Length: 395
Length: 226
Image 1 (cartoon, one colour):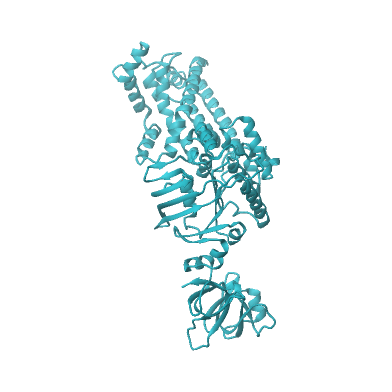
Image 2 (spheres, each protein chain N blue to C red):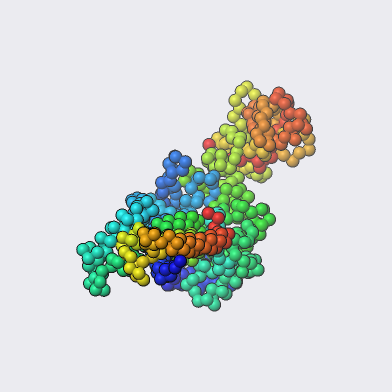
């Protein structure tokens, strides 16, 4: 196998090395079109999608069970699609119409698993050299020491993988995969278990590496912060299908379909019509469709491409709404709406208040806020909503 | 009280040979049992486990028939070597391998199956062939199971009686093992001699198992917590 691998890597990517300082030309994009039936907890659904990932980060975002890991497994060859085609540039990894299914070991697809899967019986250095068996010992050493240096774990080289900390393990797992010079990199929530500062440092190192190794990176996460920290492009998966794709800002801040809104956690979703458009201020005024006889509820929202009187949908997170017991003055927030508390319900450590202000809105508060404001059903309150907390969707 | 050291030495040779061969033969069999997705796999598992419940005389009888001059295997062996397999040390080795097979294969297979699949998948994505994954990842992470399986097959062969009696008979220096020797002495009412030999065998097997389990504990400590 080592021979085939050497020839292949020489032919496709050239003699790339982690020590090279100059940017390399962009690697080939990953293109996948596939269908795979899956059963999860009794109910069946199909992973059915088509996408192309250019060099750089592509985030796969979605709830657990959406099919993110199965998709990565299909690209790596650990799972077999029922139908489809997966290719890196011209190189076919899987093609059901030709019966092509390249062995995992020959795909040159780097994969960092969620639980890392380091070789516990080997040292950090041996882990890093594991994928370099096809090289001469001197080059193996040189490459692995360079990557360990780049990921700041050179001092751990002789330690066994089972003896190092979580953050260190994460770095070893990345280094072990990157040193093999893969044509595509798959990262399955590799940083999920880390604290924010450690995470940020590793992301920086990964970005730095990707600057000189321009290959497509598929990065699976269900963390919004990671989406914004990493994303050049986001693909949102839901129940095996792509429901949105674009830049993090487009996908996460202005979801265009309601499934995405639910994924992103909007507790409040209302039908609305555009009342006025203010392109010079970058805002619009939308009127919410009210249920009862109450007067119109107007919201200032960010500007989207929509004309006056067009029908939209507004999503507002319950945690983005402030609640005041007297009319607030001197606020930067543009939306101050009077209303009355309908109900208060404690869920774990948050309080969910339902407020009727012509429409019924859900607002999340802390227990302390409820107690210090002496909130009760029936109490008159004002809801404060920032313009950019209003997310617009197509109806 | 005299102890038949020749029988003792022969038994030791038999046990070492059998457990060494089982280590080699058992690895691929256990690998197949641990990882094959064949739907009729349980049939093979049942066949491998048969010697655990089968009376040694039954197993010994069929081995004797299979090794005899009337079976294809027996004829082939005679054509090759000029003499029959039955009542020889080689015949004894073959019978003992079959008899101790589950004691090697089952611990091997259990420890292979306990290796984290993700670690094996990681090996593959790093370009390793299944063979390299086996020797660099699966075997090192299964050392405790390999030690257990080899020790059990060794100890099981040391104390084997029925199969030896059926296949090997009682030829001093060739097929007369310790347990046969003990049986002989009891038949001859030499209880003191039987006791001496039995005690040596008891002590020996105990020491072997004590060493193995103490090693194994260490091996567990550095092995996967599975």
